[in-house]
Picture (cartoon, rainbow, N blue to C red):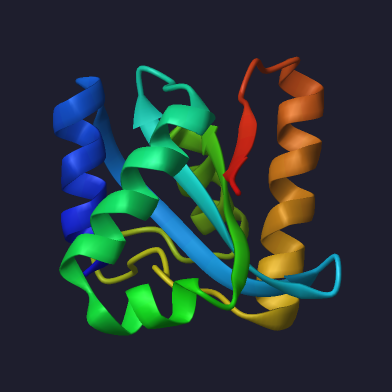
Length: 132
C-alpha cells in the first residue's frame, strides 16, 4: 500500500510527507512510476526512491510482481506548497478537495509542467532520482 511506503520514508528519513502523487508512464521503451513527494524538510530523492521501492515490494504482492516489468521508479521531492498552489490554480481549494494520489495522462503532464515552471521560477534545489 502506498501509504505504508510513504510512512516508512517518513520514519527512516525523519521527514513529514503531507502530499504525494504517482503516475505510471512509458519511458525509454519501458514502464516507470513517476512520484512527486511533498516533504518537509526536502529529502534526498535517491534515498526516498530506495526506501519507497523496497517497502512497496515488501507489503504489496501485486507491486512486487509488477516491479519486475518496471524499468525503475522515479522520485522527485518538492516543497509541499506546490501541491497546494496547483490545487488553487485548478480552483480546488478546501477540505472537500483532495490532491489525487494517482494521476494519469494529460492531468499528469499538466502537473509536471506546473512543477517544472514553479521550480525554475523559485530556483529550487528539489531533486529527482530513480531506483534502477
